[in-house]
Image 1: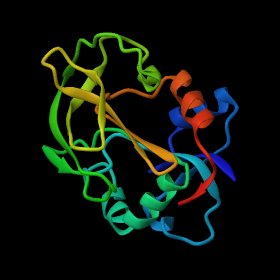
Image 2 (image 1 turned 45 degrees about the horizontal axis):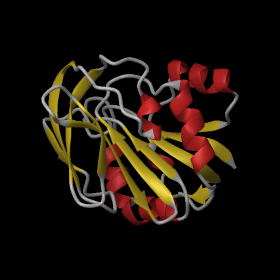
Image 3 (image 1 turned 180 degrees about the vertical axis):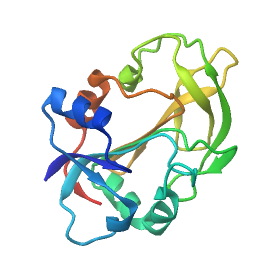
Image 4 (image 1 turned 120 degrees about the vertical axis):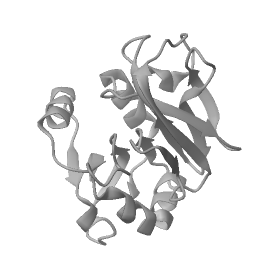
Amino acid sequence: MSDIALIGERTFLYEKLFEDLGVSFLFLSSAVLGSPFLPQFKTVMIPTGFANPEYSKTLPALQRMKSNISDFVKSGGVLTIFGPMVPKHEYDWLPLPLHYVYEFGTRSVAPSGHECSCVLSTSTPECDGYLVPSEGFETVLKDEKDRAILVRAKFGEGQIVATSVHEFPAAQYIMWALSRAKPAKL
């Protein structure tokens, strides 16, 4: 078992962040998603740009993996998703509906007492857009225009956390996600 699966390309910056925290991790390329030989994970992170073909080949694999993603969260995993970096995106590969609109810029965010708001390390994060949550999601953080930039949904025994924050997750968030998750198969 590994603590974290990062779906995307291997990067030194994520590797350094995870190593500094002392957590185990695997980088999963879209080519290996769906393999029955993958270990269990507590959390799965999908970094910014996953839907933009200029940056990533991840979206078609996520769409193929819809039932696996649903089962992972239902079984207790924590799924963290960053912005897709395309003009608009429907998260049709998630078990709950969610919509994203691209609009890059610095946002002012009011503090939130919600436990997963620790994903931010600043009150003025760079965001690549905003989210339009539907039933099942609660809005955790809004920008100055009252638009969601961080949403969360409980699903089965796990959680889905989606954000348009265009920054690395804070170390505190990674530790929070790991403390709330149960190992599950992806």
